[in-house]
Image (cartoon, rainbow, N blue to C red):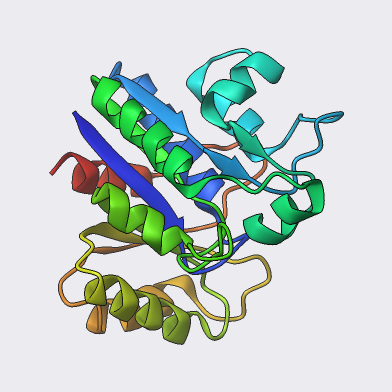
Length: 227
């Protein structure tokens, strides 16, 4: 059994893209894999196509639909805001202990590789008192930290690493998902982060052409997850 919590330095960095790519990689090799996205904001129930849960279900080879989405994403909110604000607008803020318990049960029942995709960045608020990092601390699973290649990402990534180290959270790997329109070469960003990563593997994942879902980088990330 192996569970990995996929988190990021911020929102819209590439968590879902990386998670879906890993799902496909493992499935193509007949390895058991499941995925969760317990909390999601910016979800339109009238048009779930293309949402984060829908992307994960497609990668898993499972049919889309409200019942299937509910199994992997029980807490869904319309507004594309931090979870606490999006939930407050609907008057149904997620109970932190319920989110933790839901995830723990999935980890306990897992017989293969379980990818748990977080929401927003490592410090995105879940309610008035808890952030994503509190969720990760409660679970104590290894992390996959996804960051971008935009200007400023090195500082953001190293800040995240410092915070995660302070909480004694283990990181399986750092994935630099190439940002759209980035003027910074991906390899340069990877090399710069690696100099300060304390030995944590840093893997560059370039933007892929439309329709292409696999890249050799996923194999390297998978090896880190299995280790």
